[in-house]
Length: 614
Image: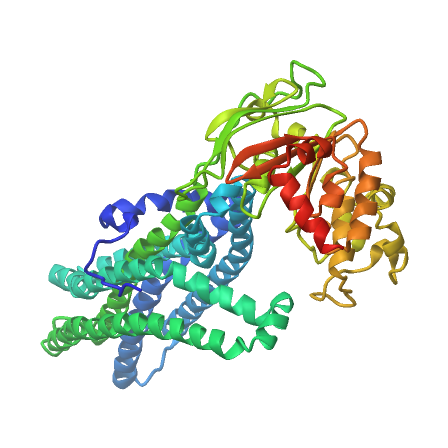
């Protein structure tokens, strides 16, 4: 694994320079405004109020001291004590303090509410984008790095950026109000106040850029840590982890990743805090130089004691405001860097489909593959090469071949999870790229070998086959009957309302064969589907059960296209057309009898499997 080098080439976001990355500020403000405009306005108003009140408090504090001195002098000269002005000013300052506390509480409340709403909104945006992307993108490791970066940091950054923006405004207002009072003492005091904070600001900004570079560099390692956590702590992996004694090995690998990441974090933290301390001393020296200057002016009677107190408070609060302003700018720079990961993900291009046709020009023509080729990204050999097929309605097609020969890839092309590199696939005479996505997928019912086992109710596990009828109990029952899962469901404690899986309370786990019946039933949820595909969904069943299910399946698909993939030739021989694929190419095709007469690859495989049953 490469070591982090903060002096090396920075990621794209940092190449644009300091001000270049601030283009995301406007988008973040728009996002927060769209989330809750009223709360955003309230936050802006409260921030303005909180920015003005500290200077007012310092000014009234100076008046109180001078009023006390004046009342003391009068009392010494006349013996009369008149505290009315002092009490009035104290009451005014108390009101200012109360108003400032209320504004700060209000800011905290607005931020808390916006944080919850905005976090949800950004996460929904991330998931909405995921729904629109293609399968091939999810199989790309670089895409997963984008997704990991977006989900880890970017969901909190828009509000952080807005909070810093408002905080910047608040401190700028405070600094202006401090400056109006300080300039009466000396314009140089204002200049010193501003310049003293710049060195620490420059260092902080540089280290923010380094931290972001480190964040991007470590994305693959972070994903590996998450994966190792899943393998060690998920119930579907526990059996092998325990039986193979993988726990200590995986845990050590997890620790090793942490040690590498921590080493880079520690080096950055030491440099960041070390330079921050050294450069912060400049600000401290400036502050106490201003203290000495102000004290000298009071001793020389150039200012009153109340003014001295006010100026000392203004220097301290002004320095805090300058530090907060520069910190906010540095923080906004950092937030913009991290927001670049969110928008980098959200702007990932999705495949643009055609005109969205709802039907083809040649009704009942079925499915045609015309010289279709496809190569997986990064692969050196094509997964499919020049495939030509024509499947008529009412026909059943069996795909035969070794693992990796391209059978499942062909199905993924048919369902438009992938797009051919060459050639085209037609349904009823219309290229799949021109079909409306929803209309196309309603025509196809498919169950893959690696079907999902949802931690839902039994009925919902079946209902996912057609989201339009996700909660339709009658449709569940009909689909379960066709998928031969009705007997299984009747034996469960709560029938279709039984919770499956062990993630939630009272959940039940099913056997592999039982899960396959549930999954098989999903294919029958789409009653209008005239293309049914079974990609080895019965691999966990015995041969007799599989033969029964496929015989049942064949009867239910008499007027439909049925495509099945199975390694059991007793099932395959039922198909009206068998296609043998090897290394992505069709090497044989025909009925079972035709292929046995041909005495080629299919006949050899059939004979080998038949011998195993003798």
